[in-house]
Image (cartoon, rainbow, N blue to C red; front, side, top):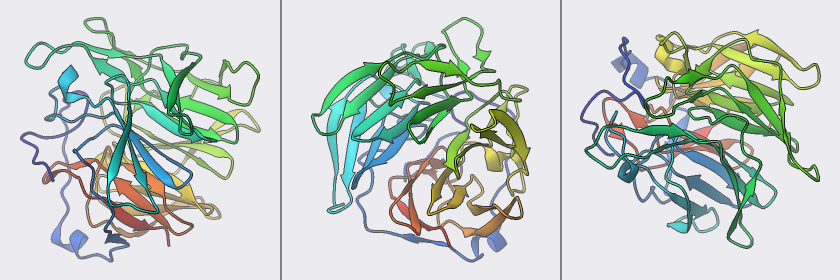
Length: 336
């Protein structure tokens, strides 16, 4: 792990009270296991990740110290881990330096959505700019191409697929010295269309960033984050494409609101799993409409990513812990 020199919150400093894992927490039933897959070649937070075929892909991310943003401290590399031979991550392409992006896999392509770029060199005043660019990487030809740009530059959001439709929710627009704008819009694009284009969704009943956006049972779950009032939240919102409507769900389990900040989630074999800053592994109960605590991860991390390995397991990649730093090692998470 890479040691953090100051409190880590990602993107911008904030003043709030952070909970700590107690000895009782750490001795709770562990539902995760260290695995022997290759560690990341460098530590990252706020990156994109997706599984395509039998490979895991990771792109971009913040490589520097907390709250220290520069062009040199942002990754521009697309990395691949072959699950059949997971002894080494392979660099397969380079692109823009960015973090705080959304990333999905669609057929044989990896799609990168938005994110922000630090235009300033290291040691100079921060000059951060959210991006509207949407790029695809064809994993069969190893070539880049572009999709229609987002209607608004956006970062600290998240993206997810429901069928052939790509959804983008949350985030904000940073534009250097200009005032940062929290987005109150959400968008969808049918990737199977002859000419894909962005279509506006009904406005979400929130303004949040640093969220996890996950497809589950044909609906879009927008989990946690930070609201536009400046504080982290455990709130969960659901978008139903069939009725084109938003609803609120019970909030995440957690001692502090920080539990929802920089969380990650995935729906595997019909079970929606979320891992949080406090190290909790939580599952959404579809029948009871509530969150159940499955156990504790070995490493409590945030601004990481979860990806599926099989019908019962996910892998936690990257991220950080404010006490122990950034993580290179991957961790297997059980969904049962």
